Image (cartoon, rainbow, N blue to C red; front, side, top):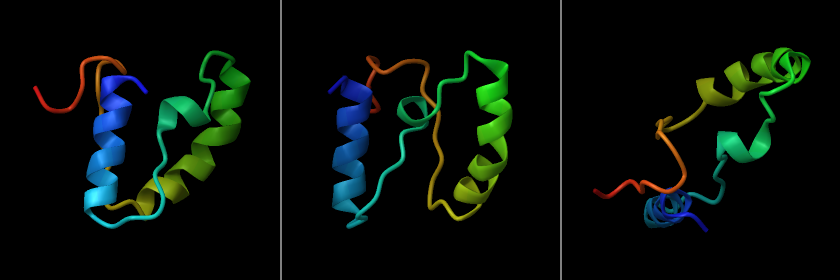
Length: 64
């Protein structure tokens, strides 16, 4: 796994959560139609999220 994903898995595990959604692995945002179809379900998913964070890429890691 790239460092950012690996760090995220570790944090999620330490908090005792069973599920993790990594947005960039779930949705192909290139076709605009795909984003339109997924943006409404994303709002529902993220409204129940414990944390939503952003990273510039998968390789920078969370712990700098």
